[in-house]
Image 1 (cartoon, rainbow, N blue to C red):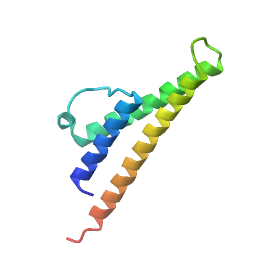
Image 2 (cartoon, rainbow, N blue to C red; image 1 turned 180 degrees about the vertical axis):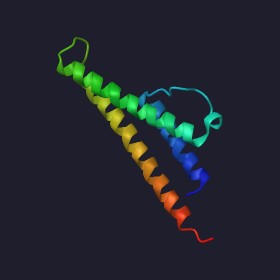
Image 3 (cartoon, rainbow, N blue to C red; image 1 turned 90 degrees about the vertical axis):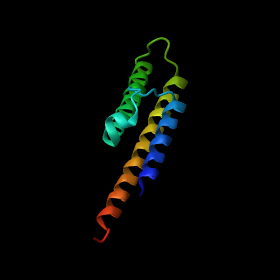
Length: 105
């Protein structure tokens, strides 16, 4: 897997985050912290989406006013999409690592 493929996956993650309404926590460019920082920010965004979805679901279960079932379901789906995207990135990174390790010197 090449660097451009990884960059493509990161772009897809950013686009998915914008479409699902998950705003990035930091607006700093990826070059400022490198790949590790960008990956960490992405994981933090995924975790935040899951926390938000579970908090809204709990509010709905407790019967708090202003929390509708459709909002809970939308938040749960956003969290699921974010998690699945993160899982696919992880799978591609593992595949890339295995390919690098199998290269003959």
